[in-house]
Image 1 (cartoon, helix red, strand yellow):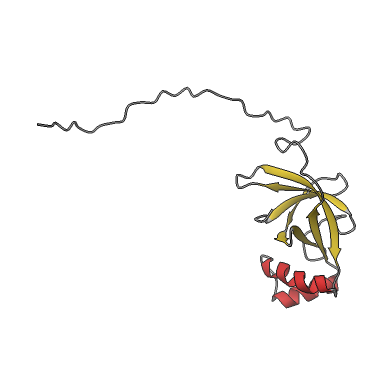
Image 2 (tube, rainbow, N blue to C red):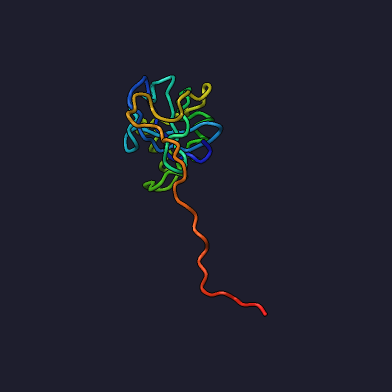
Length: 154
């Protein structure tokens, strides 16, 4: 979770949406709303499921998350919002202006904190028609190393 930049978040059993996130304070922070990414129902939700991928691009873990919204004007907002805004790629304008816009436009800054053990079945998703990889014996015979010439000793 420490290296996550994108997480797939599912609210109320709905489809998982790929959302930009920032790991901070043992959770993932997500910004959504006008002028930002769309995350329907996330700001009002109490729980969600978060799926993270590994370096290879495949799913490595899905865990239940407790969703809390960070309210503008609070101490938590003043501490966290500038940190999240500073990491936002292609941000229009300076960090302080971006934080003010989020507060004025009603954007939701939400924290997704782990709320239990990872869900089982970290391999294939439920209902997937994909088959797990089969064990295959090595069929290639190793050849002797190629030599350019023989060195003769006297």
